Amino acid sequence: MHRLARPGVPGPRRPRPPGLTLPVALLVAGLVAVLAAPASAARRRVPAGFLGVDAGGVLVDPSLGDRRLNSELGEMVRTGVESVRITIYWSLTQPYSNAFAVPPGQGFRYQYLDGVPTDWSLTDRIYRAVAARHLQVLPTILAAPIWARLDPRRAWSPPADPATFGRFVGRVVQRYGTGGAFWRAHPELPAQPTRQWQIWNEPLGGVPGAPTVYWDDPGHRAEPRYVALLRSARAAIKSVDPRGKVVLAGLFGKSWVLLADLYRFGIHGLFDEAAMNLFTKHASDQVGGVSYVHSVLSQHRDRHVPILVTEFSWPTARGHFPGYAVSAQQAARNVGRAMRLLARSRRRYNLLQIYYYTWLTPDSGHKLFDYAGLRRLKNGRVVPKPAQAAYRNEARALEGCVKTQVATACRRGARRR
Image 1 (cartoon, rainbow, N blue to C red):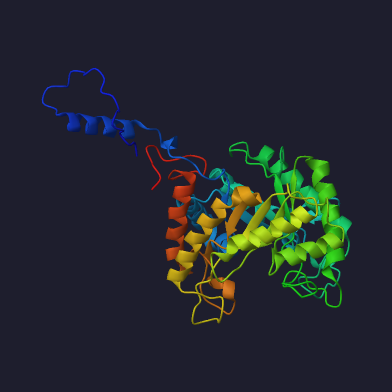
Image 2 (image 1 turned 135 degrees about the horizontal axis):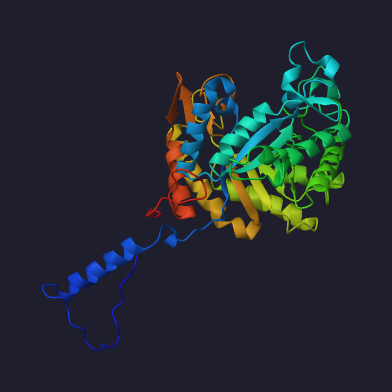
């Protein structure tokens, strides 16, 4: 709002329009100024793409159809989301090692890259929908197919050969990165080439040596294998796009301790952006976690490296799970406060982006994070939760405007709250 200051020294009086007293004239002038202000007049407090959500799980389930996916992405934009984190599953993209392993009648689905049958359809579907909304994409690349696993019996076994994983990463960059094959094949879409590439998710447990869901290799330290994987992926990314950014896997639990542990195994110089999956009981603890990671980066001459919070959330499962689960109202309060606090601290700790985990969940089942969505899928219908409103309110305050169709454009005449 514009505040009218009382002048210290009265100047020459101007004639007033007939019938208007001075207070009314000033009020009219103020209203005209406000109404004439462009949508961009509200001050933006965070850079473009700072606010994101994880776009996985039931949201991208093909059985729900493209109409539901497109509808939810539109709702994301209206909520203030500007970036989405997706997963590119190596195991689904290259499930077979060669043409002879492809089941009869299925060969039409694949193109052959480095002699490996490759099906991009699942990821192409997501990129098409996301690009139409002008959303930035952070892909997390993980999950080795059976033929490439260290232990074929374990679904989350790490890759047997880092070089093989690196070749796949290079192919991903060639498809969705700058000048990629996907963008050439879809000139009708606004080009939104990906520049950030996250290598795996949570390869280390909450403390050094602890197991993790996404890295099933009992009896062996994950650090040396992950560092080798990261080194191979980095070489592949930079060979295709020298300006591409290598994003460290999201570290969870005491992520600052895990990061320090990775430095001891030679991770320095292998990543451009650090990442952490930050789950805390209280919203006020979020900034503390970021500050600890920033401190470890600074100790290893990487103070300039940006930090991404690639997951943070409060599952609304109180009564179903002990400890971390909260009520829907508590989740909303935590979401709003965490967004404010993280935004205020972004310059101090070089915080680049934050991603809420996750957008849509069934809010049922035996896993805690099946209750973590900002929205829930109930009897085939999507229902908003209080946390979505909290996210939307903070996003409008931080971004300075309201979105309706695409993430890069404000609604005409819209003003932040």
